[in-house]
Length: 160
Image (cartoon, rainbow, N blue to C red):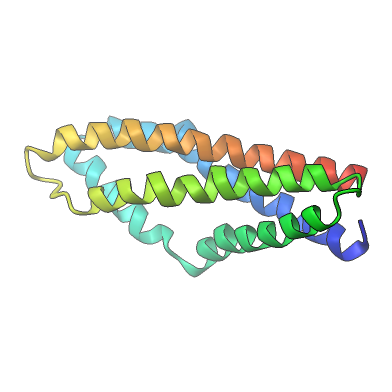
C-alpha cells in the first residue's frame, strides 16, 4: 500500500467511523427520546430532523465516504496480492452495502413516508410507532456496518 492509498484508507476509516457515530447516536438515544414524546411531537421532531439532515456537511461526509470506498474497493480488487486489500475491500463493501445501501433502500423510503404524515392526525400515531420500530432496526444495521467498515479499514492500514 503506497502513501496515497494508505491516506485514502485512513480517511475512509475516519469517514466510516463518523457515519457510524451518527447512526449509533440515533440508535442508542435519539430515537428512544423521540419515542417517549407524545406521538404528534415525536412525528414533528423527526420530520424536522430528516429535513435538517440533508445539509452539505452531512451529505459530503456520508456520500464522500461512499465515493472514497468505491475508489478503495477498485484499488483492493486491482491489488489483490497486497496484504491490506482484503481488509480494505471488506470495509468498503460493508459501508457501501450496509450503510449507503440500507439508507437508500430502507431508511429513506421510511423517511419519505413519515414526511407525508400529518402529525396531528389520529391515524398517524400507529404509523409513527411502526416507523420508529422499523427505522431503528435498519439504523442498527447502518451503525454496525459503518463501525465494522471502520475497523476493517483500520486493520488494512495496519497490515498495509
